[in-house]
Amino acid sequence: MGVSATAAVVALATHEMWRDEWQAWLLADNSSSLRQLLSDVRHEGHSPLWHVLLFGLSRIGSVELMRLLVAAVAVASTAVVAWFGPFRSWQKPVFALGYFSAFEYLAVSRPYGLSALLAFTYAALSWSSNRDHTGWRAVLLVLLALTSVYGAMLALVLGAAAVLERWPRRPPSALVPAAAAAAGVGLSLVLARPRATTTGFFSSSPLLNPFLGLDPDRIDLRQVVRALVPVPPLRHDGWWDNSVVDSPSGVVVGLFAAVAIGIVALGLRRSPVSVAMWVAGVAGFLVFGYVVYTGSIYHYGHLYVLAVAAIWAGSSRAGAAVDQRMVVALLGVQALGGVAALALDATGPFSNGEQVAAVVDGEEVVVVDPDWFGATVAGERGSSVLMAASNEQRTFVRWNEGRECREGAAPLCLDLDEVLARADRAGADVLVLPPEVRLPPSAPWRLLEVLDGAATDEDFAVHRRTG
Image (cartoon, rainbow, N blue to C red; front, side, top):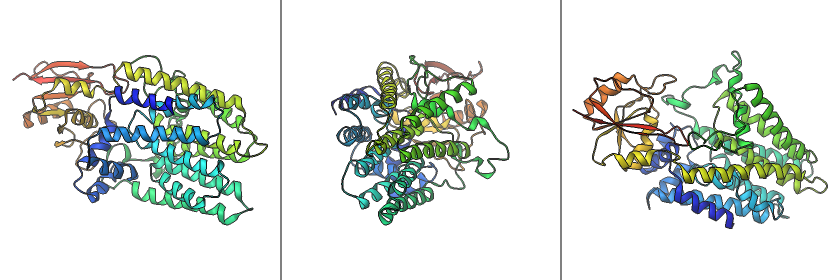
């Protein structure tokens, strides 16, 4: 608990929020009603549970309440594992220092820490208690499925494990959590299904015909490696969502992934249920990544949560002890990643949004492209910006048909000429673009400052109008 609380203090004091954190908060904060919130969330590709919580928080305070909630959830997750989990006494502080426990699901304000808390609480009721807790376990799986699509996959695996463990000895008790998980997943899919008018990251999917044109690059073993070996490269620039064992070679990445997956599976080998949980979970994530969305390290962190749950399940069965060498290796690598991430986050910018706000006057008209940078700039400066892609003053991106963004747009959503034209029509004082964009000499803009070196891709060039 002390280790986790210390990590929370460090994270709250030093972490700069980036666009996904600001997007969720600003969407909730700017919704005039719960009905409007639920309508806008349909463009996010997420179940609305997290946004509903933020909607409530936004009615009583500032964005710091979101950060406090995330930190409290992370500390509670660690407490559940420390009090009821499968780890030895000296392993518990190592777990608390893990990359996901101490950084990704604590410092970064996203719903995935809530998934970990619900999954670990379910594991405690299932494998650290002599009582059945069928009803509570069912409720936990429904809530877990509503945290995100990845939480839904985790809920399915945990529900299936209940059937494997208890069937046919106690069929009714075995089926209730599984049925609850299935119901929660169905509800999650209905609520998270993007609208027909949604654009951007969630608007297209190989679901239409994923297997006629096989694309090995969509089998994202790289993210599996990053989740299981989340030790970032020791540099401030672009360290996040990377690992020291990343390789440009797909063959090397595949070998790393196979070794990491295999080590966990071998460590669980004495418990068939645990092995089945692990294999099914990894396979499900890879299939989802190929067919729908490749994801990032914070998504694949659910595999680490699953590994802990599988260790929990295996350790609870007589004669099915989990191999401690695997546990030590898993926790040790995670702790290295957690300590490194906290140190890098404390000593360098995670995002440069705060720096933009520091050099831009709050009364100035600011134009931003690409628009997904806009949420960070708007959140940090405390007022809306003109997002060139939608040509609207906004604080968050609405991924709807009103956006104009080229397929695979990089580094801008729109052609530079159109961005400059929209800035002129808006009477913009400041233009915020990616640093690699070069304005023509004739453009009436002066480069004010280049803000780079962030852990994420949120580096900015700030231009001020000259005429």
